[in-house]
Image (cartoon, rainbow, N blue to C red; front, side, top):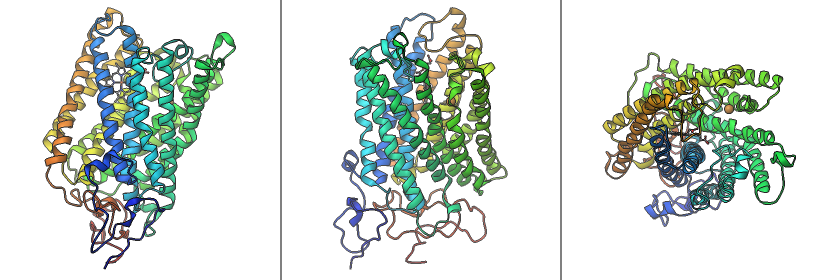
Length: 562
Ligand code: HEM
Ligand SMILES: [Cu+2]
């Protein structure tokens, strides 16, 4: 006898005809080559995002190491300055648009959200696959730009007039690439919002929705509101480049500050696109490995929404030195300081969760705790920069570079690492090697601080950012940064070996190796194509560790057996 699985997603997903018992004419697991096709399974798409993003991370990382090698000495002796500019621009662009955003939102979001809310797939599986497949051509356009005028050179911000006068063909490819990934992000966000709002399994109450899903919901709303504004700004830039308009050409009556507003209206929220999902990862990893209920579930969930709202009104802190009127500086200083409050609420919640917990220092937990330390430092730097009177002194110096690498590397990248160590067993069915994980953590932690802490001092001493050459007085501190960057470069080696080796030959993981309580752990590792044979029933909160009557439930809890 065969039994059709009840579907809770629209038709069109080819995997939907899997049957529970007896003969199946569709596979229970995908073959390797399915991962290279237009597959609509959210888990395949999640893995596609993660792997593609990681490849871009390696490319962007090589550019970073090359830049730091150049900066080991004051002269431009390794990279010709235009090439330095192109590396700087593409490094920043790749790290943001091709590594952190697609891995944190596209990768973890796609793999986890349906599993965490008890759905069989995303609301719109085909749209989901389309959103992913916009990324590879975008990445190729970006890399191709190196063959047309040596790559775009105006930084990841592409401020006019610089972006209108340097390497126009490369700049055009850059704009097209960003518009493509922006479109992908809008489609993906739409899918997340609908999935989280309408597809959770009926037995899950709103206060049982895992915090990662709350974070992805807030992230998606933010992306939906802000990304179209970036697209508009970039398309106007494209018109200025090719069709004779002068929106941003000062000599023809255009206004460069208008571009900055359009750009930062998206790009400040973009920093939350890069950190909110990471906060979500933190809220999952910490309770599992501290064996304690999360402290302040509601406060953490609502603070994501608060960050999403307030984060829309702080963008001018990037423009304090753009001839901004005094009242604007005042307003945006205050709003920026306010946005630190919900962030502090989360940090407090995680620290309070750790407090008195039975902490297991797994690699995932090491990166989560490392993130706490690094992000607090980066956040303090951010508060200083958000204060207009201080910012005017250090704007466009290495102080800024130090700050944003603390939040992006020490925050986002640490979080992605934590997420990979935590969910690798679920994604692949195999454990990662903990010894290699520890080596990876130690090298990363030392390397990050060695590279980016001294940059603050460089900035305070007045070294400008975005330069291939500098005054010899800055040499010794720059040498420290460069050594740190080499350590960071090396740190990726044990990680990559660990991933590759564990995927093939790691210890078998079992369904729930961490004894976690969220729904993704109630199915097999890797999960079946349609996630569960029978949908799970939610009988306890996602973080009820040590709570009476909430023993860890695995696949035995099903609609059928309950
Ligand atoms: C091995 C680790 C890394 C090193 C050594 C490194 C180094 C650098 C250097 C030397 C610059 C040029 C600074 C300037 O002249 O203004 C830079 C810029 C930048 N980096 Fe990194 N970086 C690393 C990782 C990352 C990561 C993980 C991100 C994540 C988003 C990131 C985002 C950026 C951004 C947005 C810029 C600004 C680009 C621009 O000014 O347009 N970096 N990085
Ligand atoms: Cu900002």
